[in-house]
Length: 428
Image: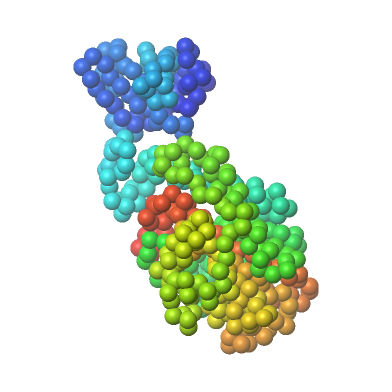
């Protein structure tokens, strides 16, 4: 008999079925026992009346893996309106050691640190796994949207010879006796691949050895990177980003409806045109000094509130960041050279995306590096490609974990990350 998932039970009323999964919970009443089985499709209620089977169930521990064969009957009070009766129960392994928290409770009562210490079992809780299902759907929507717009997925090195962004901290390592670094982003490579495919994207890990110990930062996270050629300026990039976000949100709604329901989350509407303000105006809206070179988290929150109040939007573009705060490959605004053709996208008051137009002329790269006192040699393999003809181009990068955290309302990005890596955590 082929195994089915608990989610398939409503279509099997009257049939004998085989389930397999984990003992989620046991309820031992005087006249009957209930075994709640958890599998990849959800929860199934198994009603146990036979004394011999009840004795088996009493001996089981939560999280023991078992097989159940029984008959499906309708019961409006059971999960999905069905339950399994007259079962046989067979353990598929030794009795499990129960985790240090109850997975059957609606929410995990253990603190986040304890959950992360025991991540392999904490992630089994429906609330924790729901966030990961949403993450998977978001990536699927990201890929599908860009595939539909003629983008090609690429895979770039994660060990590099020089840092990607001047001044940022990097993780150094030994590469057969030579110094090397974990890549801070695929920035250089995705730009070079514009010269091959014109439109590219990548889903992969990036590494930032920055001493941030906050609820929104990780030392390793998943970056959704995009780069496209033959743009007029950064606004073409912003238009692709808007469509990409809309595709991600729509796919989450379509493919992760159960996870959204578990977390009681409603997906946001992505406006047909996301409101945008220039950096100088953003400072005024946020009540920041006019000479502030960047937006602090408090400024971002104020801007998020303003966008929701004035435009009914959870999203807001801030354009024209000062060139002094942008990487050397950023294209300046031709009319205001102190400001960039770059942008950030705020999602519910938190920076989610950084992007913009890049330089595309070899001479401009030489000048940009010289202006910052940077030698050309560490970037030679990258900069040299621009001698061979590159179109005007630009791109952006979305932090996946931060996106899911904002979407679900998680207070800490680690709540939506399977095995986070930060200043203090290298295991499990």
